[in-house]
Image (cartoon, rainbow, N blue to C red; front, side, top):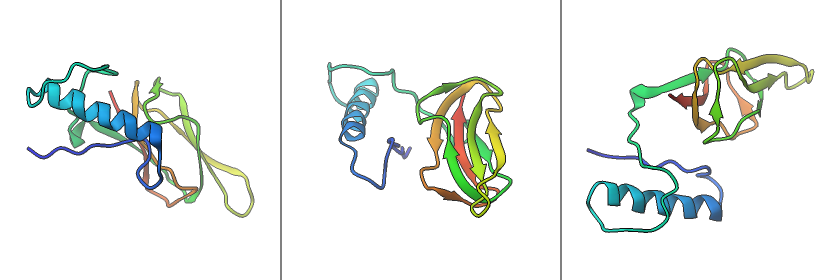
Length: 123
């Protein structure tokens, strides 16, 4: 079974995120019985299937202003991000959490297109 590893940043150098990724891999491999590792455990590893991810999509294109960070716990109805009109600087959409959960993925570019899954939550 193939696995994917996601970190807080993938297109930029992030020493803190890289350190967390190394610990996550070691903790995961240890939990699977592949290696023996007894270091600091940040979180118990959890395998998340794509079908468990809840996408939060935009209905409009514009400037993406996140209000939460990856890994943050959110409550249903909580504002997650704003979409701002690129020419008029007016708020055109606010995205809200459809469920209680944790932010698994968040878009990290300043612009977004309509119907883009800019945030993915896991319950």
